[in-house]
Amino acid sequence: MKFAKTLIAAALFASAGAANASIANHSGGLNEAFLSAYDISTGKTFTLDTGVTYNELVANVNNAAYSLNFDLSADANWTNFITGAKTSVIKYVVAVGDTIDFGAAITGAPLATTAQVLFGMDTANKIEVHVTDINAKAPGINDAQNVSTLVLDSEAAGLGQHGDAASVWGGWIQDPQASYGQSVGFQLGQMDQNTGDNIPSTFKGEWKLAGNSLSFAAPAITPPPAAVPLPAAVWMFGAGLMGVLRLNRRKSMAL
Picture: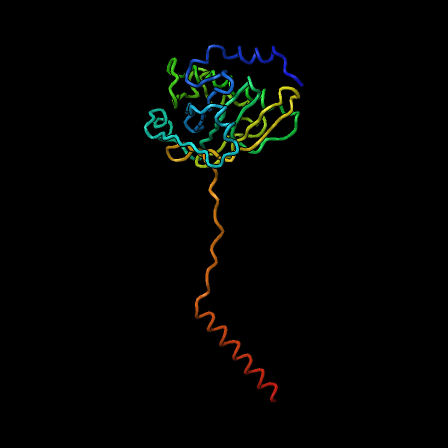
């Protein structure tokens, strides 16, 4: 199944003019991944432009040594977001869409493998449309890495509120939202431009939003517990017990 050019054009037109805003968008593999964190108790959405491109992520899908770390402690928007937040209800997502190459990467459980699930194009388009909203709140034209925004549910719609992306966060393929402090897998969905088939895969690394940082790294492998040697007293007790049993056996045989 080949995608019609009009479908691609419509997706690009949906957020025309957003390419020069905070999060690189509609540049194909140069699109940048972003964080969206939401605290339902305060109605605040915090977004962060990671500055990491779709191409860079795809190139490291099987690289267990690839890692990222973003220190948010000096970010005024993050300080506003996390101060007084109810961390037990914070949900977050990391995502990037690429409608030019028919692909996307997003947090969540492993993707379905059925070719009927149009993860690459449809999900990429929805992500890019949401990026347009985020950029509408960004402080003008700014290509600097790690630019953030803070928006309230009570503000005008279309400024990057987490809930406005419900068509993606609400379980389009799977629910990609993770809880604050939780590590979550990162899934890549690409589509064969000739057949329309999905090519899903799972990154070696996982995202984690905790404390005042966002990180991406392969999950630590917990070594099996080391065998605990028995103390010498146990061996002596065992040897003595065997001796007593042998002695009792001899006495019973003699009788």
